[in-house]
Image (cartoon, rainbow, N blue to C red; front, top):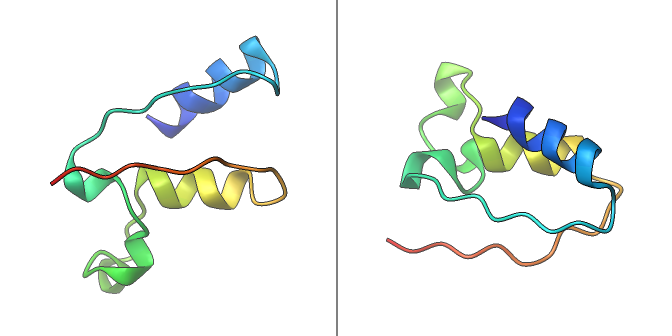
Length: 63
């Protein structure tokens, strides 16, 4: 999923916008969950780390 987001961002350019619809465990920061102890990552953490120097707008979480 993260690879697809990266490809879309590269294709559409830095001014593009993207919406990611994901299940609860795939969003948020995996470091703040039990996933951390298992060495797992999720889409939000990967995107945050990949684009750390860029302005990433607000993210919305619905549970």
